[in-house]
Image 1 (cartoon, rainbow, N blue to C red):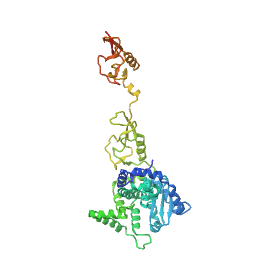
Image 2: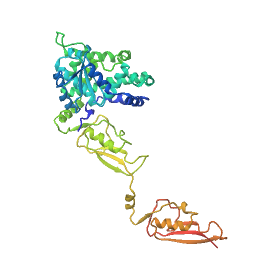
Image 3: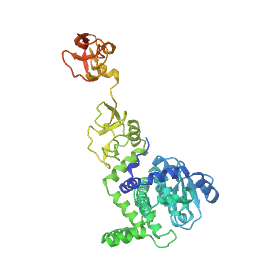
Image 4: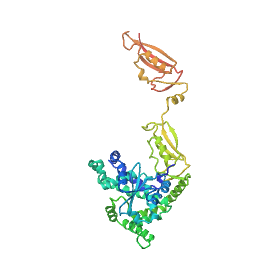
Length: 448
């Protein structure tokens, strides 16, 4: 079972990405990007310019990655070191993600904090952020224009750019949570933020974490004091790909005090012991799966750790294709919401639509036959054709009866059906079922 990313997926991350995907033009942009972007360009750039960290090159950093990747249930990505005085690390690529650390990061952070940064970057991979974040980075530095052409700039309106960067900032909170779970506490992540804010490892004074945490609390109060302050914050940081350090500290500490964190930690610890977690987070509501293919829904639920069972319904209340989902219930109820935690052994039932087969329909009508056409279909039809059609459908008790109402033998109505009665009644419909021995009388026109 793969790790369920919803264990550490931040609410704002999920909501912001959904809002981003709803923006007109985003889907087209993604398709153009996927068509034009070549991942090999990034690999060539790294191999030609940066240091490839391996078991033969900067081995101590290389050895930090496998345990983290095992905890998060991902493949070990390539790791590179870039000569850059700015302390930073980023993840890019799509089918084959990679991580780049800058020399400034190693000069700023103590060695024991590097695994926390790597766990944060691996969190992006586990959350499937990488493709979207790569796009965001390319938008920010203008590289996407050279790959996709200037015409794509029409899609990159300010609202789209703002939405993209807002999601990128929100996605950092999810990656922070992944690192916190790998470490077991938020302490190292808080220290990483403090050092990236300015407290490098070469500063002789001891870092006062309590004072830095108080600073993050004071900032929150300052921003919440007025709408003007919030506006100024947006103007200052609206085009940033990362949230400010004090805000990351605040989010990390706030999450660590919640019941969801305790549940996430229990899940994470059980997962890494190879055990089945007691509870799994729900990342959808009752409407999320409606109309989707049932096999795809089952696969998605199984990836999250659920054990869904398929239940068929033959009732078609709306325009449904065969195999589409009509509902998902947990322990017989659809009353759940995104963010709920559900017991692993809960009965998860996927109901899908599938019409009755011809064999099933016939089995429901023993001793009966189905009429091939409606009453109006037979009126004016040659009575011999009507007799043959009903016989082939399985109607056994049929007789024809002439009504002498024509004056001339040349009348075109001669031999044509005037009426059909089944047990003395007319007005039957196509596909109506009748008993095998019901009397069917075919009344037809004949010359006087």
